[in-house]
Length: 157
Image (cartoon, rainbow, N blue to C red; front, side):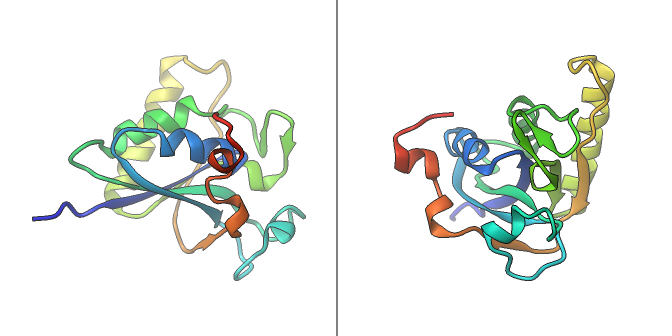
């Protein structure tokens, strides 16, 4: 019997870097970059960059739960960016670069909130974590030239 793959969606700044990190994680079967958390239907990259659509740049991960669990994906998420900076990652500024977990199920919601609380209490980050945790309402696939951008350009995160 074939394994049923599961999806998870994360916003952690520019989606190019985050996608590459997840794509190279054992147990991840595919990745797609796109937009989530906004109000405009079918936004373009140019529209998202205006800060007027409400969307975050995200990576949607499909994974094999027999090889990696959601908690381990959360560990990758926390390690891939600074979750204490509001609407910013490094030089990238704007709500599209916010730290966000868009959960697909109530179990993902529970695990994400527990993980965030645990990270806050651990002292790993010098400031309070500002990551939003919200249900995924809609995922809009980014334009093709953004998909696996680092791999296409011969780069690694």
